[in-house]
Length: 388
Ligand SMILES: Cc1cc2nc3c(=O)[nH]c(=O)nc-3n(C[C@H](O)[C@H](O)[C@H](O)COP(=O)(O)OP(=O)(O)OC[C@H]3O[C@@H](n4cnc5c(N)ncnc54)[C@H](O)[C@@H]3O)c2cc1C
Image (tube, rainbow, N blue to C red):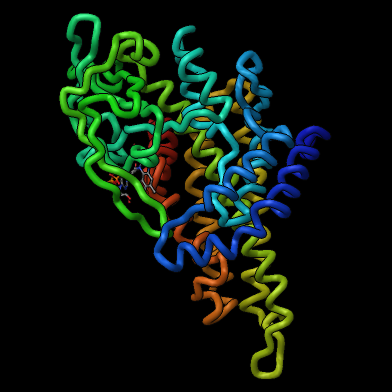
């Protein structure tokens, strides 16, 4: 058993570390000020363009995309370190293309869809969204009621999606819909590529979320989609959707590790300098235990995440591991960041430090792509079911 990263993965992680240090961290004060003014979480367009140019020049685009469309085809293991490093800053930046929808497209596209949707997406020329959740179906997507019905060569979609990230900006949204009411998740749910501006794809409202984030509510009203834009096999979109969700969950575990590591680093830097009652905070057992627990839990989460990513790359069934790391890593980082905020006292409550944005980001991450309780329920159900 070898726990060392390969030389290539180590070099890639170091490269992203330097990119974050030199390009993203310097923007953090502006990101914090902008969010504190109620302008949301974002980077100024000129900065975004400059960062895009740098990251593209460094060869950081399309890391896990197929080679024939300009990607590097790196395995999941290589992306763990990349995502860990990216999450060490609250400057929001995604290296194009975002992996989850990429993986879903890779598992499903036809030759035509490859050319028109996948290739531009890999080149960073398009933004995507996915509409799974509905007002009555969140944790349990199989309960969705949005339906798609054939009409000649086309499909006509009707229903409502909610919490859809990027829905207003996305060039295309992958919309999940029922095509067979009886079969549902067992052969009755399909996916469709719906272009921005398609009549009947109506973004009803922007929903401000905590931490300066936003999602959207979308009504599908006789939304007509050409037949060739069915993504994957009719009725069999649940499995590729799970690939997408699994990709995001591994990514979220890596992000959690990155955030927790930054919070721990901040704690270790601050605690020896802050003196109360004649002693530095680093001499207090309460703070020492927070530091020791944080380091231990980060180490555990990192090993678990690499183990899960490695098994995924081997083609093994990692549904159990994915639920474990998604729940464990997000909850772990939430606690570490909270303790870092406590260590900083009133300073930890300000919008001048990145800790509060990390906390709100983690707070949402404990919900989306499956709340913690649902992942624990999945793990327990598998174990208890196996004993029957
Ligand atoms: C920031 C953000 C971005 C999002 N982006 C998207 C997106 O782009 N596309 C999209 O489709 N969706 C998106 N979502 C939706 C997200 O995936 C859902 O919110 C999530 O799946 C939970 O569904 P729900 O909110 O309906 O909660 P519910 O399913 O109503 O669950 C509420 C609570 O009940 C408990 N619970 C539920 N089921 C169980 C169980 N079996 N056992 C124990 N406890 C249980 C949990 O504590 C859970 O938090 C986003 C959400 C957020 C917060």
